[in-house]
Image (cartoon, rainbow, N blue to C red; front, side):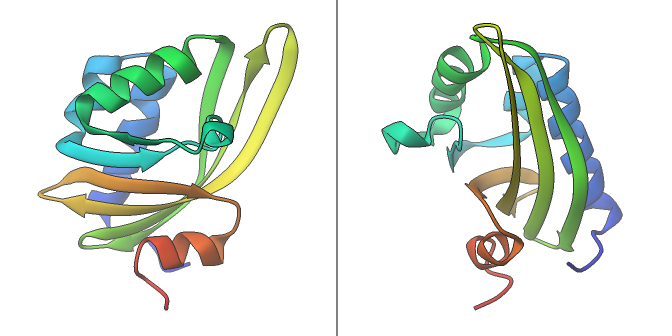
Length: 133
């Protein structure tokens, strides 16, 4: 994966910092009003979340049930309006430890996150971000 620019790395760190702090307002502020994304945790429903209302719905249905939920940014690459992140999510759900490694293909607009897709491999993330065809 290509090394991330300072701007992309700072945005990724701020994003996962807001999630780890459970600061919904800070997280929403890092996204565009028309953001859209998928969730590996909610993928069974196959839902694409849209807009700030989508973030709030995802927050309530996916984040709230977990205890000790943490994201660890393992790697980030990209520049301009395209990025790829590699991360690990861990927490406890109804007393059961859960850990999930994943990749994200991310599209940025005006310094904010406009779209992200959670996938299982770096290649899928590169494709989702439009960095590899």
